[in-house]
Structure formats: C-alpha cells, structure tokens
Image (tube, rainbow, N blue to C red; front, side):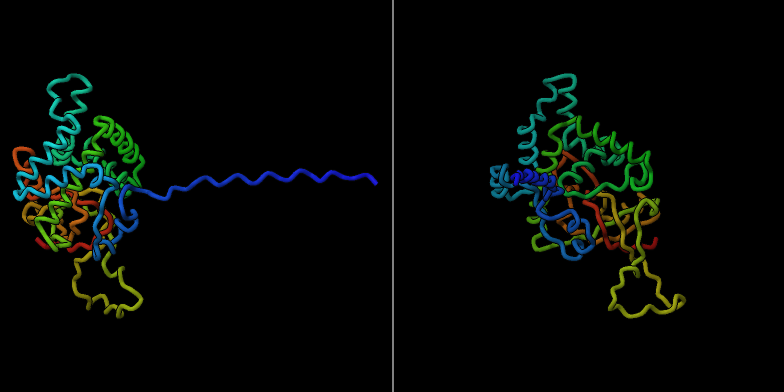
Length: 295
C-alpha cells in the first residue's frame, strides 16, 4: 500500500485591513458632537494634546486676571511659535505663508465664508471635530459643482499656511478657557443667525421630533403656530449675540441656545487692534433646535 502524503495545510486567510478607531482629534465622536442631544446636554470638548503640548502658555494665562492682557499674551505666543511676526522679513511664498495666519483667516471669513479661508476653516473643523461641511458655493450633498469647488478651495486654502490647523487648535482651546473664566457655570448662550435662504439648510419641522410617548397632535386647524425647527447647520457658522445685527443678514432670523463648547471664536476674545468685530460668534455646526423670530 502506497503511503499518501497529506496535502499541505492551507495558508491562514489574510488579516482584514485595520479599521480606523478615530474619526477626529477630539474627546467625543463626530456623531455625538453633531447630534441635537449634544445641544440639550453639552459636554466639554478637548482637542488632542493641545493643553499638554502648550502647557506653559496655559499656566501663564491662568495667572493673568485681565482678559485683554490674556488675549495679547495668547497672540504673542502664537506669533512667536509660528513666526508670524517675521512676515515682513521674507518675501515670495514664505511671506504669503506667514501672512495667511489664523487672524487673516478670521478676517477673510468675516468678508466671505465661501472664500479660500472659509474652506480652510471648514476643513479644520472636519479634521478636528469630524463635522462635515454642508455648504460651500452651494449645497454639497446635492450639487456636484459645489463639491468640486469645495475640494479645490479646501486644498488651496489649507496649503497656503501649513501650520494653520495648529494655530486654530490653540485658538479654540483659548476660546474655551476664556468662556469658562468669563461665564463660570454657564453651559449655553442665546445667539441669533440671519439668513436669506432657509433652503440652504436641512430643515425638519419640530413636530417630527415627537417621541412614541408624545400625546396625539390636535387637528391641523387647531394647532398653534409653531416656529420651532430642527436645523442642520454648516460645520462652521456665524452667529450674533444681537438680534438686530442678525436681521441685517437676512429676512429669516433664528434664535438658538448654543452650547459654549461649540464656540470657536467670539468678538472680544482678542483685544483691538489685534482683531475687531461686532458681536460675532463662530460656532461649530450639526443639529440644532432653533426658534424662528418674527419681524
């Protein structure tokens, strides 16, 4: 009887590709940050390693009582760390790189949020918080031309200043520390946003938020007028603390309870002449309960 050689053992199947475990650089997931539940029960947001890497800055700021002085110290620190103050000593691409700093991005946003700087700021939000942009020269979900324009502007805007995202990391962290000092114990602030085109946003009528335990709705002709909506805002949006200012930006104005944790920048964070503005707040997007004001 001829002995048979057993067939060689099959090689083990290849290991599946590793899947990412993080979609942002923050302590909470993008889904948690973008949900309306976060607006109802906000939690502190912290970007990875910023407090640890620049701990000497935060230690120095902790010992300063004057908000304006803290703003000057913060800006001086960022200027030295990223050599922003040397832009007059160089020329060509190097000069443009230093000039397109976080301050220039904020100023350009105030002029046009659909600019290259606006695209770079939205890209930073996507990178750090995982919140997707929804609008840039058009609705990104439904307009291919807008998606192509955003991809190009995002690349160009971010490439102008390679260190921009790190500068914005410091700005957001400084903003959050300042809000904690200036508004101790507060979790929300009432802000206002004006718009000429509500169709720019994804709107869900408030009655659609009903839970299975909600009482039945009255007949349509007996329902009170309800101006509450659930709105998906762009991943970075401008608000005002003054409703009269909001009316200047559109004939639709929404009143929103914004979690302090979602504020990236506000007028008065940095003292003039570093940066000036009128009651403006830059706010992270996602789902928000809003109330439409009647003019």
